[in-house]
Length: 187
View 1 (tube, rainbow, N blue to C red):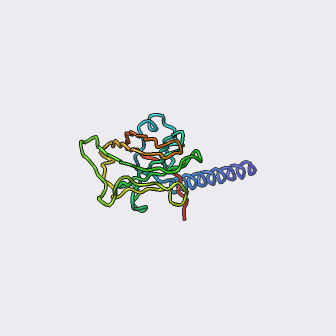
View 2 (view 1 turned 60 degrees about the horizontal axis):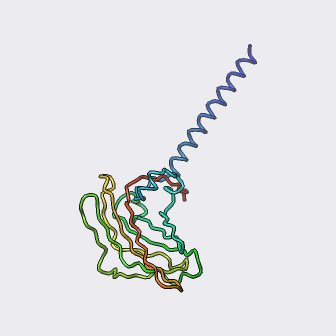
View 3 (view 1 turned 90 degrees about the vertical axis):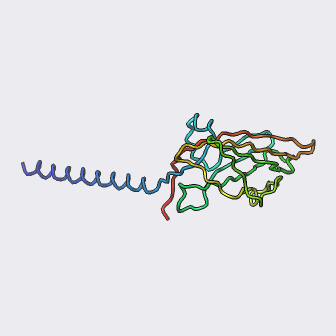
């Protein structure tokens, strides 16, 4: 009888320890996950591809280059609130690509608002093709109503310079508000 009582206490103690470890694991997991209120293309949200949604960038594949566009906020401490800033990055897929120029970016809202970038942005703007200067940041950041479900449409006109001549590409994108969970290391 004494052996079974001791065994029961050991099992109860082990069960309690496992329960505490599981609770600590869930708490740590919750602390290491950040929920980012961002804008993603409607097609990516419809597909529900978590890898694509969790990525910083929304990629647009062209034969000559991959164009990455991202909406993000200024303040990393208050990452879930507007204003949002648009960045564009270009990664060449061929050595023939000499230059990429953003000729224009026009924005419109599902609420009928028209947004514009600051006068300091004079289109066309060249995007660097090397990794150090490949981000084009468009100022100022814009205060979309993420919580209210405001969707944004962009029309981005790019000029790709190739040895055979220039090619103009227009990327028309409808961006919808979404919440993305991303791993955030505790530092």
